[in-house]
Length: 634
Image 1: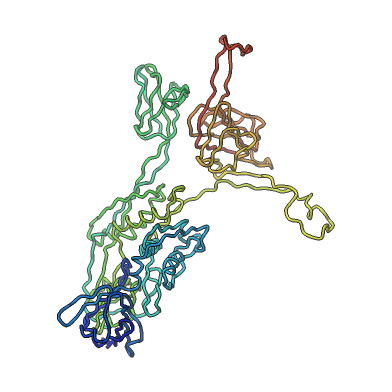
Image 2: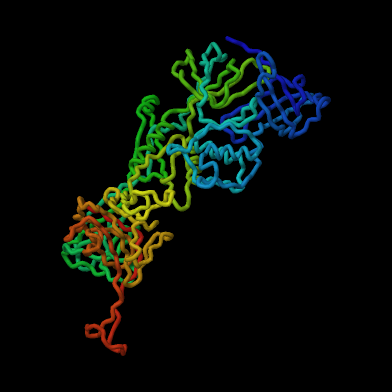
């Protein structure tokens, strides 16, 4: 075994006080930086003969093998001075990072405005550098695979708290490099310690390995995923019953009585309808009860909760069949695929117990966060690679004490940190699922679909340059004479979906209703219409629209029309019912309108006179639409 006789130097406010320091003084380093490293120094009271001790004085400790000043191993502020006995004092000092615990600041980092461009490591560096620190940060990246923050805000928060949040988002850690006088930010395990730790060689004690299964979970269920499904339920009328139950909450409905489609309405409106639906109570209610023996068929779509469960069989075997099950629910889990990914990620984190041990080592330059290869011939089961989570230097001992182990997270910590990340990253005007890549490599698998693709063409025959064979004007002319025109349009998966957050398909000439991109809805008064430009277009006429299904969500009574030939022929359709076009074509458009006010005489003839005595008003419709979709086939 190699024994190293370390040489030390202790300074307070640049005054050498080494001869007054007692053995067993210690320095503690932890990977967790909630407060920073600390030192506890025992010193003779006689030190007051060479220096006036006071809180806020700066303590520096150096150590080396050949010289006491080979490397600075601690620097920080003395926070307290207490009597230890009649002859000695106890000085407690926190490293300079601790200063950031008491430094509140207000600042916003916007991805689209600020120079950090949403890069987590750059934001971290700026927070510390603004407080006067030097930062050596590994770049967390700005490409498509990197975690980027749209906006990160400190509203009078403390700098150290914000820095810890950013480190948690990356699942990185940071420490103070005392020799270089800088804060280091890097991924955990970035530095692999070059020398293997071997019991009986550079590990001077017989390790006691501890295994804690309290946070182990080898069976995981993730809730939150739903599956969109279509259901059909039947009943028989008895002449009096108007209320019928459904098994699941309905999203869209199609109700027939004896094969005749019935009209759905909303309670409190003036529209004439046959039934209304209470989604929360899973009921539908007729205005007039179906007759005795009438066949009632309700077809409806619904979101069915689909929890996903997985287990880790290797863990179950290792712990003699013991199963510890945990149920998680996350707001960002939307699909079964999302939930499956999350189950596998959580099992990877939690399926095995936390294993750790303390070593007395003769290696003196190990840092917290390093990964180290360990060999223990007395307990070969535990041979492997571990992370250094804590280090203690004790003045007067020929070794350092390190804690190594598997980096296992508690269930409560996973909840806490993920919820913190949701709170930080999510913006009020967008869904979390559009932003989130989870901590600890809990990345969500998101499946994106194309909204639409447009091919355009431009006539360049009359352009200044391309349309002339001679050089005119002595310079190149910017722009073109002709604007590009749409040549082909195809919706992703042949399905047009309109949420009204933009006006890409608004027919600005023929659309007369209010198309509001702020409230994301259409509002109609009597006689108004919603009309699109081409939602499918093939100017080559090689693809022909033959069938289409129009759906809308909203309140009010509307006339629904579609045209497959660019608006030359409009054909009336029903909501949610596939329609086969009489006049096919290669230019699909939609028109939804309310009826106009109509004045008629009491005997049903067109109104002619203006005396106001013999006519009545047949009111037109008004309403609101929040969603339109159209799926077509070629």
